[in-house]
Image (cartoon, rainbow, N blue to C red):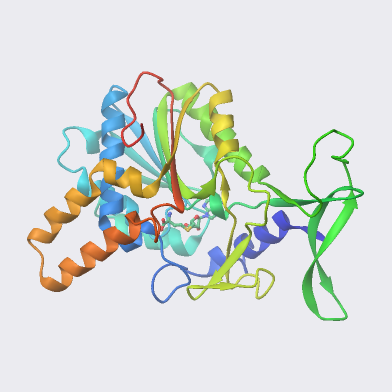
Length: 341
Ligand code: SAH
């Protein structure tokens, strides 16, 4: 049996068969759609956030890093929105951290007119030694998780194996390890606990980098504070939920993001952490609805409907407004990070 983390790494990142290596998963014809693909206002508000934080951090040269940039739409929109901010574009060197060659190519095609200095990196270990602004939308949810199940005998890792009889992948429990009953904690049998060692490693690298060189980060994802204590692993194909163990490499697999752990790591490293804020609240505070009205003034009837429904989808609690959360970190506790209370 292999761990769920190994399964996710292979299904998403295998050089030949991995989901992100083969496909452009986004958009109507793809498997899922993300906030920047729904409305340009998303990227515009992120741009306003970045430019304001850059100003408060003293301006000057800065590396703008996007993690898992998809098609590059967020970057295109945020650059367009910040064009007129004095010195901002001239101060930027852009770094796109992307493992998928298909998506890196799409990013290049979309972005080549948007800025003179854009470089692609394979991992966060390659960030340049300079002040840094980081943005990541739906990045941490793609990083592998492990799951543990509380049982009578102790805690067991949930694993995946190929059942020769049924000729299918199935979940199985590994050998019992630590017994929580003995440690005095009471968590109900059958409870599932998730951990993402890969997310921790990335967050530690980012936090140390920001602490050393100065800067800030904005992270948007669906996730939770505290303990999820249930199975959040999910797969999506053609805009519908899909069995996690079916057709690995041909469906997107994600898990909800454990924001408490990410914030703890940032704070332990000496950064300030802000949030969680609901995406709807954050975007409204940043001026998304005002921006949508401005766009609608000069638009055709059809475009007006598109702008309005897009922004509502991002903000409305029934759509993405509450499910998606926003967290920020900064190296300077004195700055006023916009969009958060
Ligand atoms: N941020 C984009 C795309 C989200 S999909 C948007 O909002 O539209 C997840 C993205 O993360 C894809 O670009 C995928 O290729 C990338 N990705 C997944 N695992 C990664 C890893 N380990 N390192 C870098 N990028 C990764």
